Length: 394
Ligand SMILES: [Mg+2]
Image 1 (cartoon, helix red, strand yellow):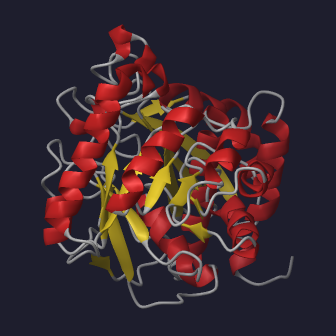
Image 2 (cartoon, rainbow, N blue to C red):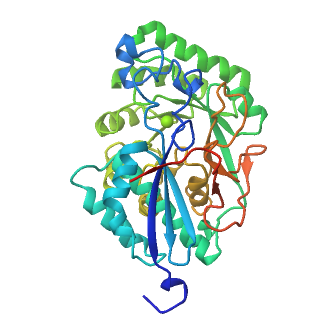
Image 3 (cartoon, rainbow, N blue to C red):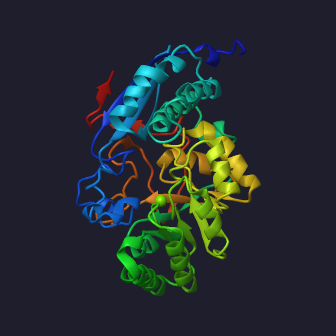
């Protein structure tokens, strides 16, 4: 460490909060929201958990907010999902690795947080907690230097980001200037041949309505088995399926690898529920995916993304982060192998383009004509919306 002025600021406090009612945990919505509706999941094989994703608890956790404050009183913040248990981990375990570090000492902090939590988790809650801390540290590092995070990552490689939209209304996405639309898959293997026919019919009708040049994808949210996925892809190929997303659970790299053999020209996309550099190596090497989709608010933040993205580039693979809002945008704009981004349509009926983490952030940009130009505001360029209830956890 040198003796520059910036490096003398040290982290003096870490604070964890829980927020309910949407935000980074965009599944935490009221039950009339499309995202909690009739969508295939791994638990759809049980009829009692078929009609609503809220019925088995997809909406229980809530958003996590972490603030870090330096010795001068400057505050950075980051967000994730994971709610109360993730906030507890931040306050009672991770905090010790952050307080006392100088602003910008992020790689070491991340490595310590990760190695100290391996004994109880390498995906999910623990990585949610680490993500929020990591994003808060990058936000603070940018604010202290007066630079946007994308400048800390090497600077932009393009002037603006183009988007595809995820939701059940790709027609509205096309009209609003998005380059593509990703549909939630409605039926899984338990819905039988009728369900499969319905999945194909829905896709075919959108393709006919939206034309050949609009990217159309299916998000399967881990709901399929290999034989079903093979059949579905073969039936959709004539209608230009651009990619099939997350057909299997994250652990089943071998089904991914087997499906990859019959896919071209359809691409295989996955990784929103994957974590660690080694997990992504498995997905690339064994799973043979063409597009990886780490969620920057779940995978551990910006710090592991630098390594995962470099690994993916060596495999000729796109990195199109899942969700992630501004945390994704600041990363994507600095990487050649991230040519476009996801916008998750979070309005309840999927008709309006509202901020992805609404109502958690202020100044959160939304795609206009399917595009975003990032501001030069320091850090991630957003503030916490203090009008919503932040519950402090200790
Ligand atoms: Mg997905």
